[in-house]
Length: 236
Ligand code: SF4
Ligand code: SF4
Image (cartoon, rainbow, N blue to C red; front, side):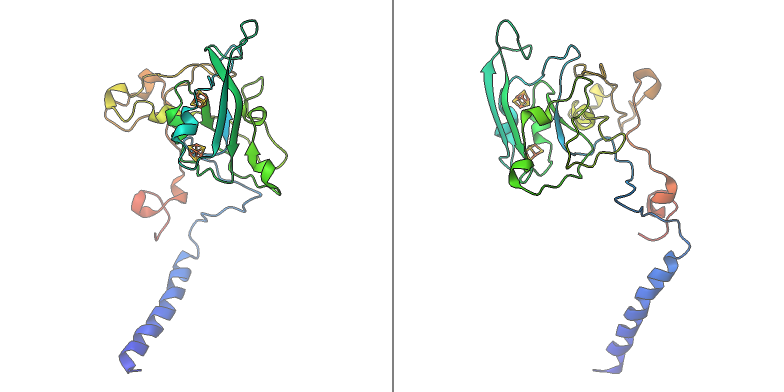
């Protein structure tokens, strides 16, 4: 080996230490996970829920569009005619069987976008692991929100405060399909326990939080993001 490449190699070796030393004294961006979790953004795709209307009726009408669009083929739905005396949903039919196989789900949210009634949306909780395959297949009873409109918390799931809020965050963010003229327009129905949720703040010049009651897209503290993006952390 010639002298030149060897010099370059040693520079690269000590250069690695230089990167480490530069970070000493910088604000910490890590947390002692899983004891402490960072707050999740309102659009995060976590474990699904099946929503209900404000009067308690289920939103799912058993149309199977979510199952048809799912790229991982992990949703199984069977619809049934609503019993006339005790309808489960306001439609003709309701979701009689509903299952999601979480060994296959990739949390793409295509099911959420395909659903015509906003029945299926996602919570912010993704810390769930199983010791057998049958626990990974969530049934309708596990997915439908409880009488307060909150996700049911199963023994193998690690829920933290706030992870059951904003379950329709992604659906509300994408419902105008990116069309600026619909920004801030409510195009969804009310939810049990929450009523009609406010629109998410948009990204265009049309954004007017005071007039629309928008909520902000995310709040990130400056000492947690890179200087390149307007934060305080040096480096990447
Ligand atoms: S999030 Fe994507 S992969 Fe998961 S059930 Fe929905 S469509 Fe299927
Ligand atoms: S969750 Fe939505 S798309 Fe899926 S079956 Fe129910 S109503 Fe249809």
